Length: 198
Length: 198
DNA sequence: ATGCGACTGGGACGTTTGTCCCACTTCGTC
DNA sequence: GACGAAGTGGGACAAACGTCCCAGTCGCAT
Image (tube, rainbow over all chains, first blue to last red; front, side):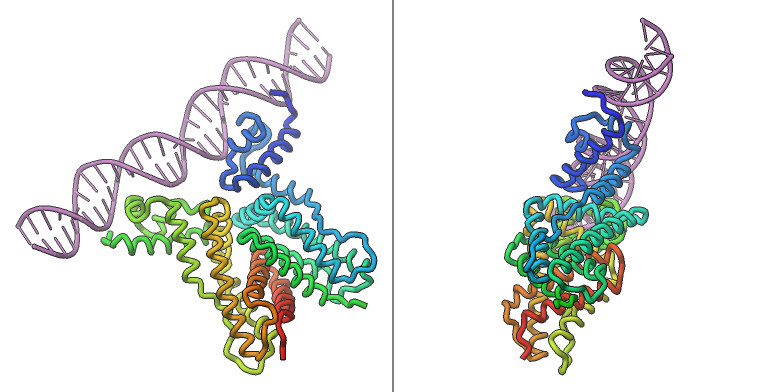
């Protein structure tokens, strides 16, 4: 086995952990399953991390940090705000369909974090990030459409996150594409009404 | 220990399991934790159930069967459809605030069911039930408000479930009541636009 | 009262879990 | 080339897990 500095091992283990959690769920993401995925020994794991919990915590933080939602509106003129918002949500939906297990993993990590008081800040940070990204896209969308949010953008973003979360959860259960598109449509509808479309 | 027929033990164990899952999460709901909550021995557990998995499966089915959402609109005349729908969602929100751990348990059970192919029908059935209940309420709401759904009620119900799910998930993370109310308002807004308010 | 099936308690089994130890090897530095 | 720090491998540990066995006890029908 190649000799790799501990810092790189941490990154490799986090990546392996994400794969295992996506594929088999958080409960099945044991230290042994993770090191097997990473192709290393248990000793290397505990040389790089103090404990499994520390790995999971870092997994959550990492995954939040690199979250680069594909919801950013395209730089297209001539579309209404509604069309832009709906297209953004539908783009997220395509992202979800392309890798459902990843979003499922995100949900599990959130629930895990919610279960222990000392980890709740992690979940909060995760959603804070989501909201910030959404707010950014919404600002851009309004600019492109020549509209103006009549409700604080942060609030609009918070509602958008709730809607996409619901879309995700329900679609993961019934995999009903048409229903998901109806949710996207209704969500875009509701959000657009928080803006002044001059 | 009192002698109790196996059928009653099953019910008692399911009830105890729900308490444990709500309080400590599904991962911590071990057979020992459950029998401790129910105040019985491990032998009684395996006399009533073949395995822990069987208990969890029955827990999911049971909990779905007794689901009696408090979202049913009040029998009040003179309210608009929008007001009725929003009031219904807010009533669900109060229900969520009253026992957040219960809803968190429901989410965990859903995710658990989604993880194994043979249990996915359970998750699907759970949501089927949600949708049916929501559809019922929506029908009644339209009747009370003298309105008519222009989209199949089932589809409206499906969207409603997505919205309340999103409301639940995001509120469980940030516990922001105002944001949840904004979600309720926006959701009611979007849903109402699927009806003809004569 | 007696027999039999239903139920219970305690203890045990084998696995799997997270964690750790220790002998060993490699690398960079003097 | 020696040396200490950094990294590795394999095996081991205790604890907790789901499950099971078995001797025993209760209740009910006869």
